[in-house]
Image (cartoon, rainbow, N blue to C red):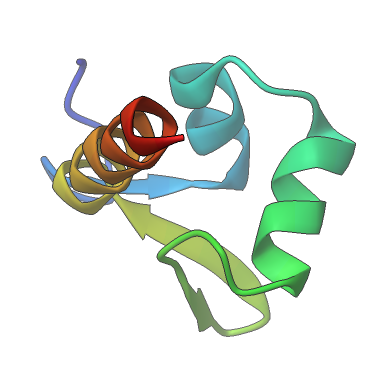
Length: 66
């Protein structure tokens, strides 16, 4: 992943959408339900890529259990 001007592990909404390969509405839904790790800074969502990776791994593990 490319280092952005926000730092090596901090990405914005658009980058998170691209990173996860999901639609805008899907990412908003995940945020609104608190299912995805993120923080709002100055009215804008910020994500740490390593936390998104961990979240994806957790989702894979949940899917394997069902």
